[in-house]
Each structure stands twice: as structure tokens, then as C-alpha cells.
Length: 68
Image 1 (cartoon, rainbow, N blue to C red):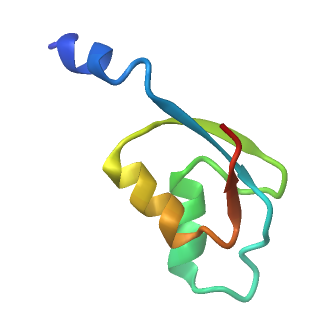
Image 2: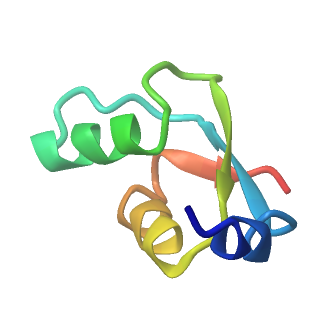
């Protein structure tokens, strides 16, 4: 296993907090929240800061806040 790729992203993280409910939203937004390790209002997840993660945050920006 190549540990070089894991160390490259080790210092770059982003914390997101869920502030909105996915009720009455498209099911893909609910699945995106689950992919971000969020599924309850008030829950905070610390994720590796990648373009894919930033895209997921942008998709549900009305339901989450970036904490740090």
C-alpha cells in the first residue's frame, strides 16, 4: 500500500456542520449528506479537503455550514 498518498492529504481537512433538514428535498441531496457523514441536524464531520468533497458540500450548501 502506498502511504505517500495518505500523507499528502493528512493536513488538509474541512469541518462541516449540518444545519438544515433534508426532508422534502430530492433524495440525491439526502444521499450526499450521508456521503458527507452527516445525517442529523447539528452533527459535525471532519473530512479530507478534496475537490470531490468540495463539490458535495456545494451540492447541499443550503443544508450545511463550513465550521473551519
